[in-house]
Image (cartoon, rainbow, N blue to C red; front, side, top):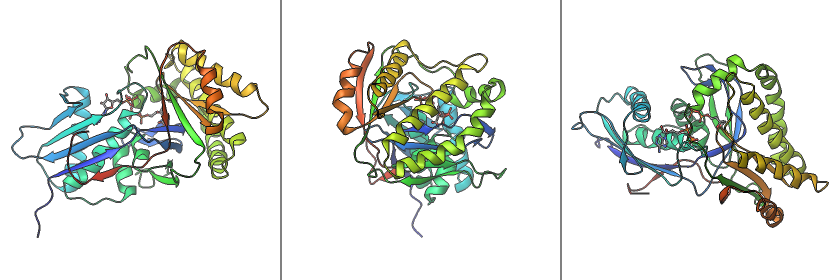
Length: 339
Ligand code: ADP
Ligand code: DP6
């Protein structure tokens, strides 16, 4: 019998939710109230190497070449505990990770981070998990990480079972499905670092926002319509649904007590610019969405890109625009290496 492999490297990308995950029916198991839907992005990525090492006194977490202590390291250790229990190992592990984009700024570093960690930690411990099992595991590190296991367009099924066995992400449409579609990520200057994890913030929405119940009632139909609009590559249906969902997400955040406000004045000006861009023509040409952060993702079609960029030039405070496309899911790299 060959000795188990002790080290593995995985890469995973963040995703942007088109139908948001916001609120858990079971916090301990990370079970959401509603199914969500996202696009896994190209170009942005986390690369994580896990090495099990019996000579270490405890787990070590190195992020972007700096050793991490405190809550972020504790979260990684708790996640490793799950893998230790699955693989029946007791060794500490060294986790070395690099993100090629800023953390805690609304670019979903926790999604790519825990997707890459789920892959690298299990593979290095000698476990071979299906995509579905990896998704269920990644979910316990960060809900949105369950979706970053897969590439392209991904649906995270909320499931109904109390034990969460039917709660995992599934690939919906391939990354190449709609070649005309692009995501311009507007990096907003002066975006504050997030103070409260989304997983905590969302539960204050569940318990205090008077708009939350109506949202839960509306999401399933919106998700079905979005899936169908995407399948048909229909911008007239797709763009308005993305905006509708984002506006509702923002509304339940703003009606949370105390209110959750993730946007800056630049973010808000961007949303207004996109609305004006669509109002100027009979057909919608773009859609905005944002997560719990100030950066704004703008989806458009290649043929509208130049006009859209001209419109955005008038918005002050946009530091950079990343042009992203749907990308691949989490994958193992043949050899360990630095990102
Ligand atoms: P973001 O908006 O970047 O997703 P989150 O609050 O969701 O912000 O996640 C940021 C947290 O995710 C960080 O504080 C850190 O604990 C964790 N994180 C970020 N990058 C990684 C990584 N590569 N591996 C493991 N955890 C990570
Ligand atoms: C607004 O999965 O990032 O991005 O467990 O705190 O990392 P943590 O929560 P997380 O919450 C995602 C919230 C969202 C919507 C979404 O991605 O579906």
